[in-house]
Image (cartoon, rainbow, N blue to C red; front, side):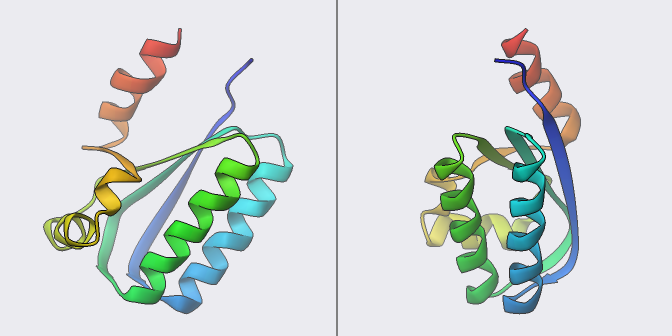
Length: 109
């Protein structure tokens, strides 16, 4: 299977409104044949419960499409939220895009 990778860069607050936008964006990306999505959260400074729920929902959509979803560049606040809610067990997290490229993409070649 040839891997088609897309990166989604988020910024600001990930809440219900932005989460709904994210889900629509992911559906469009999957419809284009992408099978690996990387959500870059470098510019995200806060995630609320609705935003977290939207990430979980996005993961379900991606899995149902037989694709993969990863996150990178999360800050300390988001990392703590992921750990407290056990989302760190659901989302494979990379330090940044370069780390993702080194660890995941290089291993696929």
